[in-house]
Length: 373
Ligand SMILES: Cc1cc2nc3c(=O)[nH]c(=O)nc-3n(C[C@H](O)[C@H](O)[C@H](O)COP(=O)(O)O)c2cc1C
Ligand SMILES: CCCCCCC(=O)C(=O)O
Image (cartoon, rainbow, N blue to C red; front, side):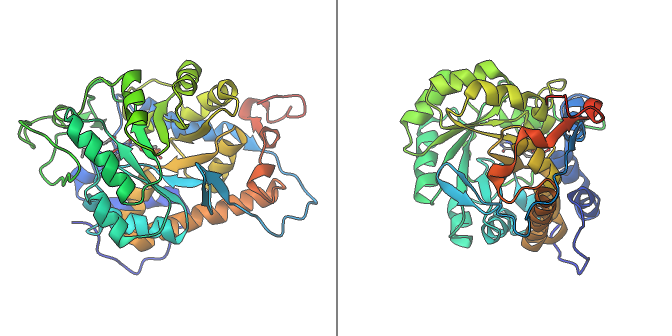
């Protein structure tokens, strides 16, 4: 089991965390967290897309202070960052999601607790009573369980429901060409399996789809809206058309996401589709994004292209494996420091100063005065 704290120095970059975590994690856990669909083209492209934009500095402004606060679904975050829903934090550290939630609360960033969490939503709320927390709902075949989870999330203080919509069929999660098998060390307090196959003998996808409602449709989005008083966020939107439908169905926010490249390989990087989605939505609901966010400059780029905030997935798991709650705090602090530096150099004192004018496309780096991003 990972999770023994060491006195290693704090990481300077989130990119270093994966190597630090790898040394501590059992191989199957590292492979599961790192995993991607297909050849990993989309997983890589999510990160590369950020590098295709350059930041344009603006000088001689008073940037002695940066206010990085943002309001999402009525809650104030000190950073435009939400910890993405990711399964099974106890595989990274004994304190699991309790540690992650404490770190998120300490820096006042958001956290989405996965339906696939290893700690229950009640345990997490007991460990970290404050903090902006949302519940990620995987719709299960068991309708009563879905209703009960919505009620439990609200009672435990969650202020939004995040419905993941990009898992229509069981996937074949891979890393280095090997198909992941459902291991027997998962703890799943929110899920009901009925006559599920034996873990350790079937693929990861076969196992989890034994309890998931499949496929889910727009009617399920309406069902979710009807069965909770909380705002509903759709996570996994990639097209302008689906974003338009989300507006029509009365959804409160969407997260442009390809699940960190873990669903269908070959779909576009999220940063590349974000502008189209933002354009069609036209401010009628909040738009977030995730996939490949690794630096404060990445956050600035996503916000410049219209995201209200970003979700961060794998780096949080690496930080948790590296040094538990403290590791996650350090990682969030790195993002905070880097965002402030990027804002100062681009002449931004507050989040609302961040606009598309601060970005140039890589191919246009020499002709930015005439280019549009
Ligand atoms: C190990 C792991 C588990 C995940 N579990 C979930 C989940 O339970 N629900 C969900 O909607 N997304 C899940 N995701 C996807 C993340 O929420 C997020 O979309 C993705 O990790 C963002 O990309 P990034 O890792 O490059 O930041 C998971 C991702 C990883 C890496
Ligand atoms: C422990 C079961 C994991 C279920 C699926 C979580 C997920 O969405 C992922 O990408 O992994």
